[in-house]
Length: 384
Image (cartoon, rainbow, N blue to C red; front, side, top):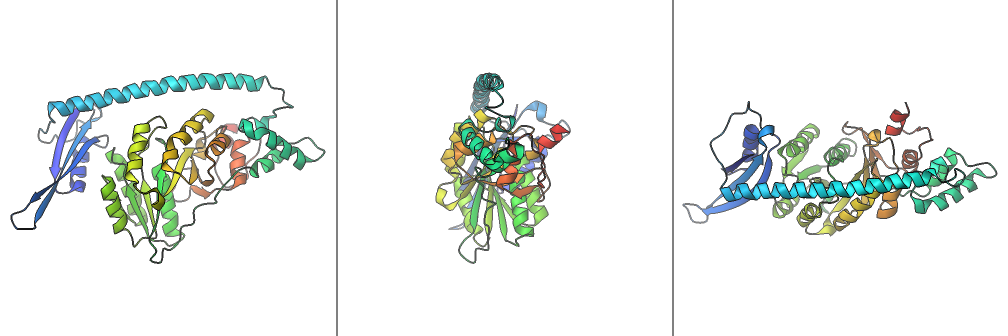
């Protein structure tokens, strides 16, 4: 592992040096802000000290090596111990997932043994507690006929809660709306924020600001910075809760502020707690929880329980185009009690984000129904 200390008067300059010398996989271990008195009274000099680390295998040999800035031995030991703890947590998570997968296999075998007339195929992806009501509604809609997929789709649509997007408007001096997007690793939070921001700018002509507290990986900052450049909005990186508050105050002339957060596993309670500490006053934020469309039933429960401390008010269901089975969605809705605000189905900005509607979500859940909505679904790709 390569560990280096960087000092300078600008965090941006330090970040560029880190990426130039260590590459995009460098991890920021610690950031410290120091203030010294200048030669003249009242004049202060602010410097930053950043310690970074990167695996030697991830460090490109073609990059120019900087001066020898090796961290003290105790810092090396601390970083190694942190990595050991991460590996322990990962092993524990794998054990838990193995146990859950065994439960899923058992449940699947149980479902296969149930007679078709009791649990028809359109009901199998629906949360157990919803099934009696769904069957009742489908039979009412079908009348004297046997309920078919379309009847179940209509019935399920009446049971799904959506917000049809968030109401972003001109602030007219009342202060901006502040929207924080949270969720597990790899669910598409940063791309979803870019889509929301671009939609606000291009469609609603709103003044938007972008902030990120995801400073763990250098590449994550660059991704959102590039999105901000493309849609022409102001962008800043907050390295602490205090800096986040300062940037929010600086962005008071905006209509909307979107805040990106680092992805944290539903089993990483400490990491989720760190994000929560950034948001000192939950009442000032609107928190959206992002969950992929193919979320497992058991994982849905863990995600909701872990992110409850963030007090989310709605959901983004991402990657519908990558989901061939959406059997965890109604479990997610039943456990969280949250409405779905948006659905995302690709990487295009801002085209691949859509206002949520009950009929579209029901089409993702019921496998035997042909999709006529504009949203892309992995179920259709799987069927082809």
